[in-house]
Amino acid sequence: MAAMVLAGCGSDEGSSDAEESSDTSVTTTEPAADAGSGGLTIVEDGLDPDTTETLGAAAEESFSQIDAPGAVMAIRTPDGTWMATIGDESWDDDAEPMSADVNQRIGSVTKTFTVTALLQLAEAGELSLDDPIGDYVEGTPNPDATLYELAAMRSGIPSYTFDESFQQTLFTSPNTPWTPEELVGLVEGQEPMFAPGTETFYSNTNTVLLGMVIEQVTGKPVEEVFAEQIIEPLGLEHTVFPPDASFPEPHATGYTMQGQTDEPADASDWNPSWGWTAGAMISNVDDLLTYAEALVAGEPALLGEEMQAERIDSFDFAIPPNSPERAYGLGLGLANGWYGHTGELPGFNTVVQHHLEEGITIVVMVNSDIKAGSDCPEDAPVLPDGKREGPCEDPAVHIANTLTAALGYPLAPPADDAEATTTTAAATSTTGG
Image (cartoon, rainbow, N blue to C red):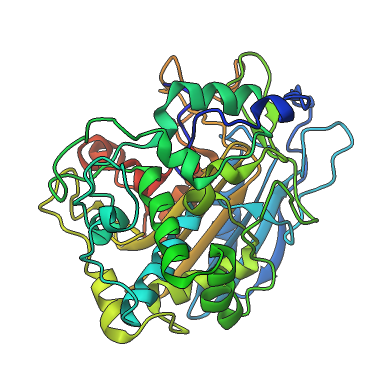
């Protein structure tokens, strides 16, 4: 299932609009010979010289091992902020160097907004996290699964992104618009994966269903709820939930090998509605730095102290495959002391993490979702002549792992422990991830 690296979003089946939108073909691009020629540029240098030098070297090393035109990276500590760019905004011969102010499709980082809004409604008494999803949406597998179990990926409801007809439509007619009802309809009638609360499995259907619940309870479009309850209170000026395939400038060109064979496709303008509240949002590095601290540390607070504490304590290590090293909770991943999420839509890969104990935030945005490494599976959507050094990882994930290791607080486990501590795809999202 090479196509499903969409861990941040979901995939769905074809809609009635597929034929209408199919006049826009998939555009493929051969990377320029000097791809990624834009050198490392320090945009903000608020850390000590030794740390700055260490991070710069780690950024250059990790970027040389991925298949992507460029990247934006930022680390904020109690002592200051380091921000840098590397590479270019596209694989075109005349590409501009990567800019730190680009907007990014953030994929499954959207899930953190969706679950935050859900928790806010629970705090306000508008719903209970113990409510079964069947009270809000009919026809889902495991209708007795609670909203809490959906938010923590413990519902047993399958992910629509694995539906073959959905994948066929996404990769042959990527401008097809999807409705939440169409996405959820793809799993209606399917057998549950497991009894609610007994396992953890990363399903985009969970978060789309929660978006439908939010709209029912509030009587408002979810984009209004996000704006009123999260985006505006935090002053996130470049964060939006797009109503369509629109992509505010400036933005880089995003490339994917998902659904491709020989050359990467330009996925910049693919319609993200298939990810909806599981993966459709757009943001930039400055907004994500602010958001990560609010999301994890509660500074500034999006939730009351009691609800914030419940969220941070929502990682049940007794539920497989969760472990103390890597687990999934209420719309958050936990990995070696880092709380946050990764996001992936075709063409873009994002990492947003905050180390609660050390007060460190990292954001990495890459305009490619193409895996690279020496041990990628044969069916992985990689460049035919791509990089083959190091572990097989998504590009932003690889950079984040390298930078956090250089800081002394590694996000990834040691190589010899990686297989043992890998749990859900949630902590390292894929398709819409």
